[in-house]
Amino acid sequence: MGYNARRAALAVIDVFLERMAPFELKPVDFSVLSLVAHNPGITSRQLCTTLGILPPNLVGMVNALEKRALIVRKPHPRDGRAMGLQLTPSGQKLMRDAERTAAALEADVAARLTPAEQRTLITLLKKVYKTG
Amino acid sequence: MGYNARRAALAVIDVFLERMAPFELKPVDFSVLSLVAHNPGITSRQLCTTLGILPPNLVGMVNALEKRALIVRKPHPRDGRAMGLQLTPSGQKLMRDAERTAAALEADVAARLTPAEQRTLITLLKKVYKTG
DNA sequence: TATTGTTATACTCTATAACTATA
DNA sequence: TATAGTTATAGAGTATAACAATA
Image 1 (spheres, chains in turn purple, cyan, orange, yellow):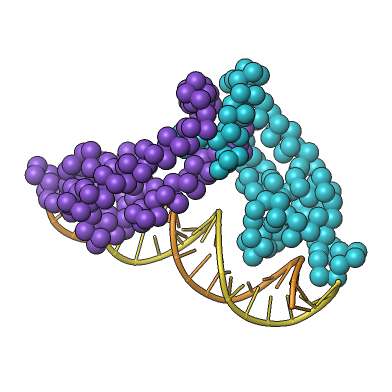
Image 2 (image 1 turned 180 degrees about the vertical axis):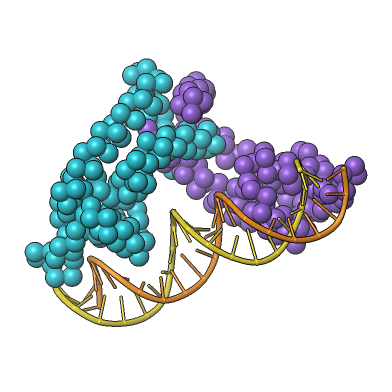
């Protein structure tokens, strides 16, 4: 069961890597940008807790995205220690296209199953991991 | 969907790591020993193709298992380049216990679902990755 | 010429300790 | 004292190139 779930996850991730290649976004980059896009001013610490990334490992990702001029760090208005993250205009443009691609991908993967099968699959997967 | 499949796989792997800790076997170690147990004399190359491991990365694992006196390398009877792998008596004893533990684990995870749900889940997961 | 096992190496991902500046 | 961001670093996991012995 663990084996089959892992293979399904890897298959979906493979398709993701393939389609996101034009944007040069790994899954974690997409997650970071998507969270910043929908939560402007979000802090690094919030990103870490949401995505399950350790702070030291996020620094390099944010640096790379900032060097590509997709996000900017701005001093947090009420906490002098924190930095609020925001998308640049080019970051916003990239994410509009990337999120359209991601939605199309999920739709294509889902198309291998009927809507009823999709609901069943998600339900059963949750049953497996919810009781951890 | 990729997200839910990944979480289910990680949950199963977590339980595996926990229960296999007494044997000091990672999932890949268990797979290697299990294959050697049921295919005495199997070569490193065969292990690599079966498990999707690259040859340079298998060397260290086999070295570690040999140092723990769980397996032995013997010259292959008909191919002077190859080494046949076999379990030592202590390796056989360890794997008898480890395989019992693994079977109990799979049964426990499966117990979160009815037999019909198990069949459905496996079927749907395969539908997702078979066309991958 | 091709293959088995191996070494060396590199790159990614993940994890811990410790520093700085603010709170 | 506790927290946010950062640096340095160490450990897994995974990848390629190249070599010796053998086919």
